[in-house]
Every structure is written in structure tokens, then in C-alpha cells.
Image 1 (cartoon, helix red, strand yellow):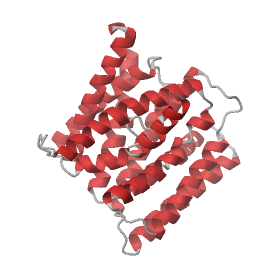
Image 2 (image 1 turned 60 degrees about the vertical axis):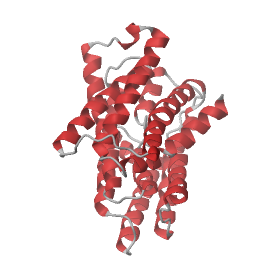
Image 3 (image 1 turned 90 degrees about the vertical axis):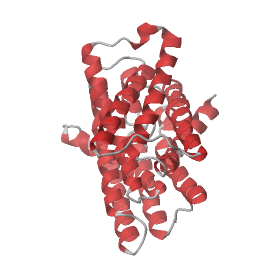
Image 4 (image 1 turned 135 degrees about the vertical axis):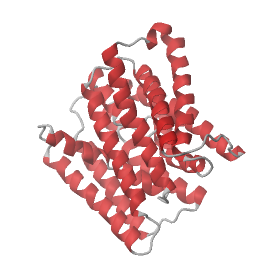
Length: 312
């Protein structure tokens, strides 16, 4: 069970970026995300009802407000803007590397709110931003394929993830992680649909067979199977092992983008990507708790800052 859940989180969440690229090649980004989140949210609702009955979806007004806010930030804007960044020409693997900087933004947010991260954590933050600069300056400035607008959209997406994850750790939410995910996916579907209307996207479900397969993969494999595997890991293994997905996912994304889409992986991407992944390793190791287990509240916060779809 452990190996299967780790493999699911590593590979399936790493493949999210490829799946998004295949979908948005055929349908406008916000509309595609709305369709994905709607189906995933409905299926997760079914999971909750089967496990706990209709009462499992019952939430208070305060909890509903928190679910709406975090759903908009984590999924509606976090994933929507990342998809838009790929529409602007950002390769899927590079998008994964930019989003991988979320732990660094989280450290900065903690510092602003009065926390004092250890020195090793700060070292990881500095290294991470150096890697991001290498990706942007060397990749885009030397005639590469890394558009600045796409990078900026993914940076904003990662900031939305960071703020949403922080709020999910402090706001009152339902105890069940699957209930949280179901509501957030449905909220994200509404948010994405609104953004699609505002941006002038037309309703379109004209996917090719490959597009339908990619959409189904995003819904079933990435939004449901990988998330349930992650929820199991949070409650059964140490965080240090669960958190390995943070630096495995970008590597998987880059490899899949290269193998399936033929995305170029030049020296700037290899160098900058290696630096970013190294920074995530530093931060994860520095933030590793002394105990092998963690409280339910902390596990819930960890789920918040991890891509339920993904971080991408």
C-alpha cells in the first residue's frame, strides 16, 4: 500500500502539467479547468456520501466561507492561472518548476506573519529564487522558449497557492480531507466558469479522443486517485517521506514534457530546475518535524499547500 500510494503521488501529480497542456491545446484554459473541477468535485462528493452518508457534506456557514475562499485561491486561481501560463507558451515542465517554488513563498509568508524559520530554511528560499532567475534570464534571454508572461502567471498562481494554503491552515474547515477537496473542487469549477465568461471564452466540449482521455485522466487519476493516496500517506507515514513529492513531481513533469510533447530541455532548464529542486529539498529537510507522526491539524495544513489537482 505504501509503495502504491507514493508512486501515485509522485507520478500522477507529476503528470498533471502534461495533462493540462493536452487539454488546453483543444479547449480554452478556464473553461477546461471548470469542466475538470466540476466532474472531480461531483465524484468526490459521491465518495463522501458513500463513506459517511449525506451528513458528510454538511458544513457550517463559517466552514463554507473558508471553503469558498480557499477553493478560489488554491484551485480556481492557482490552477487556472497556471493553465493560462501554459497557453502563453510556457512549457509544461518549466511550469512545474516555477510552481515548485511554493514552499519558498510559504516561508516568506510565515516570516511576514511573525514566524522565525531556521537558517537552513532561509538558505533553501535563496537557492530557490536563484534557480527561478536562472530559468527566466538564461532560458528566455538567450533565445529560449521560456516566455516571461507565462512565468509571471505561474508565479502569481504559486502565490495564490501559498496564501490559500496558509489560510487553510488557520481557518475553520471540516475535519474530513475528502469533504474539503469536494467542496473546493466545486467552488473552483464555479470560479473557473466565471473567469471563462469574463475572458470571453465560448462553451466548447469539442475534444478529440486524446483530449477526452487527458481530461478524464486529470479528473480520475490526478484529482481523485492521487489525492486519496496523499490523504492516506498523511495519516500513515512521516511527513519527511510524504513531502518527497515536492521535489519528485517537477522532475516527472519535465521528463514527461520532453518525452510526450518534445519540449526542449536545454542547459538553462536543467541548471535552473536542478537548483529549484535542490532548494525544495533544503526546505523540506529543514522543516521536517522531530516526530514521525503529526497532529490532524498539521496534516490538514500540509494537504492545503499540496496540489490536489497540483500543484497544477
